[in-house]
Every structure is written in structure tokens, then in C-alpha cells.
Length: 253
Image (cartoon, rainbow, N blue to C red):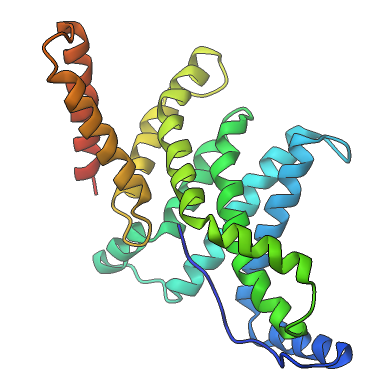
């Protein structure tokens, strides 16, 4: 889900007063984009509240993280597909959107007990995309404003590929993790099957190939292990099952 919004910038040589006027006008002209940025910042703040439970109940913070992610996804869907249509073509476009996948992700885990691994990809996406738009907002204030924040944003953008790959790894690990949640009584029996559908949608993404590339790498590595002469037969059968599962996910959409 690697989408950025950069809708212009203000006067780079503006005075502080002029800079705030530029920022105010930018907010008025780009309400949805600013709303997306705000929900992502709230996601980060609630994650801090979940990890460091100083200002409230971490249990409540966890579900607020997922609700903020759902709100971000809904706003992004409205931005990408503003007109809802009851047609097969619209549904096809909808399920290909990363924002639809992210909304589905939040809905899955709203009914599961809190787990840190669940919010890891949500946090990483929020950091990546909020950083990108924060630079646009800082440009409204002037080129030399908030240089410390600009440095942090540059670091995030420099690591964007690694962040997206880490998100893909977390999403892949969550499939076996949901089974452990069932064994611990923290998730329903249908959770792994529903999450399986989420991963199938993620593999069909047009904008984010990282999950698809990761599963391809996993399949290739497992095939190498399976083809070694010394690999036990029971392990070969397990590897064949996992590779078949990945191939089936790729065909679901």
C-alpha cells in the first residue's frame, strides 16, 4: 500500500506569517489529503500509547489504531474511487486497491485480541505515508522550516523499500500467527481463513509488489530445500503443501 499525496507546496521563501497562511490555504484546498495525513499521525500516536501505556488504556489504544487505519483506508478509497457503482467492473477495481485490502485487514483484527504483530505493518505504513505528506506541509511553511523534521522524513524516505519489505514480512508471518492465536483462545476459528483471503488480495496488488515478491522468494527457497537429496520425505510433503498454498493464494482473485 505505497501511495503518496503531494498536492503542491507554498512559497519556499515565505515569512512565518505568510507560511502559516499558505498552510491554512493548503488545508482548505486539500481536505481529504490532510485528513489522510491526520489519521496516519493519529495511528502513530495511538501506537505509542499502546507500547508505552502512560496516558490511557493500551487495550483501547490498540483498537483505535485499527479504527484509524480503517478511516485512512476509507478516505483513500474515496479519493481513488469517488463514485460507488453496483457493477462487476467497479468491484474488480475495488478489490485491486490497496486501500480496500487495508480496510479488510482492520476489520479482520477488530474482532481479535490485541497482538503487537498485527499493528506492526499498520504503523510502518502510517510512518511512511505521513512522512511523505509532512514534507508537503512543511514546504507550505517555507523551505528552511523545521529542518530537524525534514531530516527525519529524509531518513524514512531513504528506507522506504526496506519499510515496505518489512511490512510484507509481517503480513506473511501473521498467517501462521493467527493459528497460534486460536490455540491461545485469542481469535476465532475463521480468522486464519479470512486472513488467507486478505493475503490473496494483497498478492494481486498493482501498486505494492513487495508481498508478491516475498512469497515468490519463499517458494523458490523452499523448492531448493525440497530438491536436496538429503531432505526427509515428510519435510518434502510439508514444503509441497506450503508451495501449493502460495500458488492457490495467487489464483484466488
